[in-house]
Length: 391
Image 1 (tube, rainbow, N blue to C red):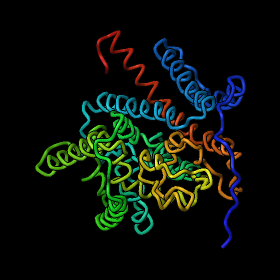
Image 2: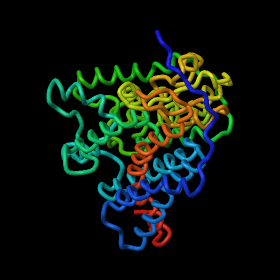
Image 3: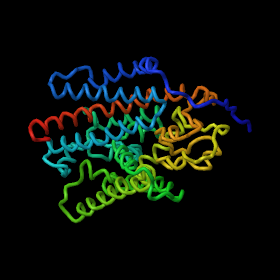
Image 4: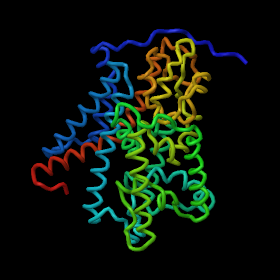
């Protein structure tokens, strides 16, 4: 077996401001169109929200290019996106329904926004029975089933499991809580736990196929706590609510804070496990230069998805579960870790080129997904301060 030749290089320095701004120009133009949707707002609060979001999003991308850091600036937008999504989503639900509760009539009428976490559970029933086991609309809205499938396919081809760090509107919550403390209170997690999300994926896919119902959404999703949940009308729905809240507190709030890891995404989420499989077809991966690596293991200690280990260091690439968040790249003191375009020579001299090739599609997905919730949340907050009402 022949080994790929690795060319040695020193870590890429930051980029000068004029060059960085030039490199950011395509992102600035594309986000201008995406955030405005071809129709610039005229109402004062909406104008302020649009301007603040536009400069916030592009300022962070400029800092990514300017400093050479990835995760530091990605996380700011990703966590902001998650918080604003919760504000925007909940207020819209209350405006439309009067509460976050999902009634049987809502489901019958197809008023449930389609969630990407349902995708693995829908594939087998759709193939066998030609039925989508989710009470949502197929077409017509941005949260319709067809729209989410198109977004998922595009982001999976472009990012693989990077979907979980550059797209998923839930991932920013446990990402944010994983950064509450500077040091981890729980430092060691046995590697066997990394197989749990694959077991959960198998369970929910099989049970959903047998029952023709989205089992994970009905019983295991912690994010029901921050979005919508079945109306509590019976012992069953009360038990469901208790499970949702318990999982949210444990997996999204407490364990990420104590471990400084994304425990919900890395140790529980079936969609995360499913997305790991798409890393095999994605065009980017994360590689390690064995000549520069000094085995300091900082990448292992900071990896939020448990995708770095002594075994992956020896192999020279991250595990299949890698979320491509960039935290290991930022933490490596030797600059030995880099984004790599599959099928091209491993040349760390061009590591910054590979990083930029990855950042353009990744950041564009994140900016596009984050833009509307951030703008809407800003408008709602302005309304709160000016009228005393969030809704």
